[in-house]
Image 1 (spheres, rainbow, N blue to C red):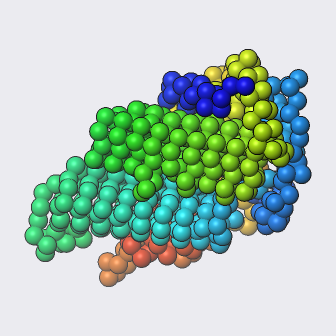
Image 2 (spheres, rainbow, N blue to C red):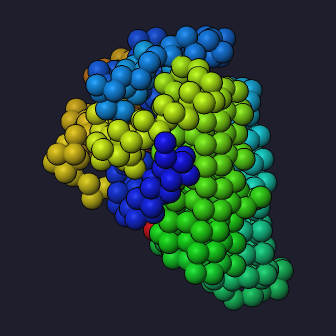
Image 3 (cartoon, helix red, strand yellow):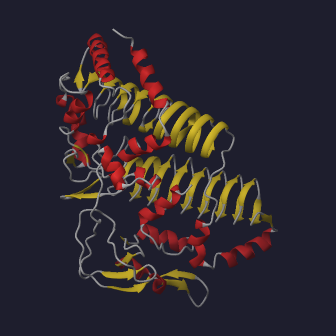
Length: 521
């Protein structure tokens, strides 16, 4: 019998050799960024033959301890992934992921942990509140809209990317330990800066020039009156993030890290390759081909891991585990699992079936040997198991150069039909700017399009009053907005209150397009 460490080394070496494009294609294609209408629920899973059964989250929680009842014998007449797929399709799963910890008011969000008031956002973990239209938010974040990667005790962030330990950040990129920043990029330890870049420990600056406090605030007031220019200011910002306090790294916005190849938005990682939106304040080591990784060490081929997970191989949605292989959504003290789904505090299981330690090691050796023989030991879950349309996932958001022909040749699914939204005939529809050529790409997949008529534009509902105070008409909350690409969206009360409080203009593009802005680097 071959030692388990030898199998682990074989998997490690193959994953270390993979390319950035392979990482995006194989891992990021498992992370959806749309919501699908499934009968009475909204779900992360579209209605296809590859999708699992879904249940209401409360029902799932009540039955999670019974998931070993789905355990099955390993069938050596089939390859490993065929065995896994049969198990995957047999277990009713959450309609959206709520990973550990109690959350509140997060029905329209996915991959949520211990957070409150989260709407149309993804991967929001660890004690956050009031998060809208955002991706990759974690560790005590509050009042954040239209943003990507906001970490570590940040607050009041709008339309920004790569924000760490900062507050009151608007239309900016790659800001750390700073406050009251507008239309700026790559700032650290700064306060009250506008149109600035590549600064450290500076205050009261405009276009990198320092002003006295009185002059600065007078100029700031004049700049912030030009509301219709805000999004264009953001679009003109430097797209690349500086790699602060890092050595031997290449990539975009890699902070406090060492020896990282092909990284983007990385925080405190030592030794890694092909890593995106990963890191944690306790530091991580040996992280390879991983997305949304927050584990301690030794992670190879991950999608979303959290807190003290170690020695994890080609798995996704894992927390607090060790020596887990090809498993899905296992947490809280699991160890020595192969091909398991939604187990908690379980050890020495294969395909959700319990074994003794001796039995597990013997069977694990046989399974890995058969996988090596089939030339799949080091592969991630293949296309035939992927339940998502490729162009609805992070893979396409990060790299839209993938073509339908290219991904279908690999066996991924591609959504051809336009996403439609249910617009009641009585709904009042307005345009963001000018009447577009409608392509009907709205809020939620699966509904039907009505013939409601659009009248008016956003500018009819916002502007300065006679006292030069910025106002947004609350009637906008009753409207459905269509942007210039034909995407439909609405303004929700939490968003309206935020825009009014900080003197911000109404968004002119669909919420998913706002998230996409964060990946232009």
